[in-house]
Amino acid sequence: MNRLTIRKPDDWHLHLRDGDMLKGILPETSRHFARAIIMPNLVPPVVTSADASAYRERIMAALPADDRFEPLMTLYLTEGTDPDDVEKGYKSGLVKAVKLYPAGATTNSHSGVRDLEKVMPVLERMAKIGLPLCVHGEVTTPEVDIFDREAVFIETVLDPLRKRLPDLKITMEHVTTEDGVNYIRAAERNLAGSITTHHLIINRNAILVGGIRPHYYCLPVAKREKHRLALRAAATSGDARFFLGTDSAPHADPAKECGCGCAGCFTATNTMSCLAHVFEDKGALDKLEAFVSLNGPAWYGLPVNEETVTLSKEAQPVSYPEKIETGAGPVTVFDPMFPLFWRVE
Ligand code: NCD
Ligand code: ZN
Image (cartoon, rainbow, N blue to C red; front, side, top):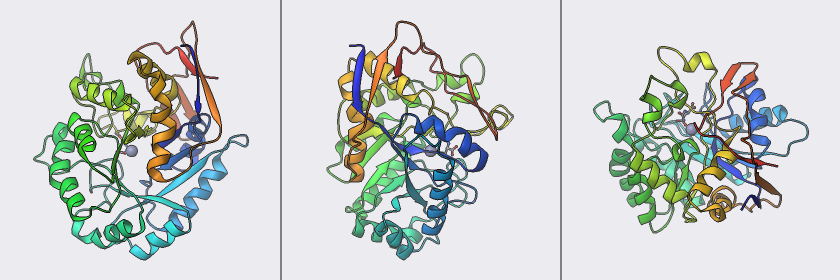
């Protein structure tokens, strides 16, 4: 097969930032994707419905005139979040999910949740009205090794929370371990997982072998090869509980290439080419549409896109810019370390 037409894809986890960075990188997503769940970890974070509404307007104002793109807004859960404001945002159609960052887990997460008890009234309300919780599933306890943080989160935070609030719909975002995949597979209801492009392609060697490579550093950090293989198996299985969330997370190069580089891989530009390669490699091109275009909308209760896109396999490698130049500085595009032959027509 060297041509494939699918429903237009969506991205169920995306960082668009703000200001000049937003303007520079938004076209990289709106070129191929119809919608995306927009992460709220701005500085300061998107906490209230009013914040989300203003941010949505800034995104729409930055959109290239010819692109149609719908940002699906989220609220950043803090210990001060008001359940009534969350419900109001949801009922108005603006808010599609609430994001839980354990405080300190990743970039701009210091306003995140320290004590889950303090946000129970918000979570209870969400369970009641059917609003999904998107979770950054890592503990932040210094004693826990960074490679174990997801597995420990599942055991000590996620599983107890699901038992306490079985009606709460939870998206375990950017799953990076076999433990995460198995946990989602075993769930009877109200749990799904997003998987990034880069975690299907790299394992932890990419970050550390032959020199330290900051553009492969993201959070949750890439794990061992057996975990990557488990993610590939889940993504290409067609199981409706797994869908794409690129977690494309741009940082200007100087913020990555330094003594304490930021976490984030920027994959918006070549994600569809990378995914077609991965799915073809697994003999599962027929499952690509489920992963990028069908499973996500079903989980979030939204219609699938009417538009389609066609992917074609070229004889020669497709080239992408090494960097996207933005008003906030250059952003390095994820390099999968193999040639890409698939492109979106
Ligand atoms: C994200 C960012 O830069 O905002 N970084 C990342 O490595 N994924 C934060 C996040 O989603 O963890
Ligand atoms: Zn993210």
